Length: 308
Image (cartoon, rainbow, N blue to C red; front, side, top):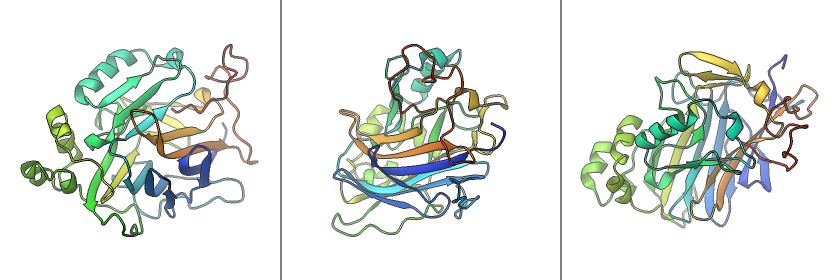
């Protein structure tokens, strides 16, 4: 692509019920039978659809210097187990970088809550957020940051009466505090109050600590920031370990990128956020030759909602 793509961002309780998101400006309220809350999307150097360029830089600053994108949310669940991550509708095994299998073994050692099957016909990579841990975005990140996967950079829980209206949400900075989920472990609640994400990861690497967490009940409001700095939307490039980067244009399959928060046991969706690349005329960017799902590839006729 000769110019930075325009991006159409939508969110909602499911892929069949999406609304445009005011990127870099305001959060989108979402409500369904299983989840209610708000989702905010921030993108550095954002270009909106034709005629609606939008705000180029976030109104609220990123949590960490160097971040280029963020999906922040706040809401309450009507179920006690959920995951945040990626679901592909078509095989991606032929496009995984060399060493992916070994890298995933390492990541599962670091983060036992990760579940994934990237070599299946419909691959998935999800993590259990009841463990109040990392989110499972399968894209390589800089080694100075978290190993291989994007993280919930910030995470906080607070008690709010189940019948009380939800407060207005802005993705402003907030300290980590999981006290409402650690009522049965006062020592952990004290140690993790305001702790850095690394301390949270170390604590919940122990399965016994994860099991000690209280369920996400209706009177618990959970806020999280799913963000990182490895994607450059202005150039559509991905940063790799070692300071290298490459263009994602050749891998674009023409379908929206989908981030999904869903329940482990049956895949029921709580909320989704989608990104669609548009050209300057407002048309969807065509799939790159040779990309998964691109025209001309055998066995790739079924529509997909691939996620990178």
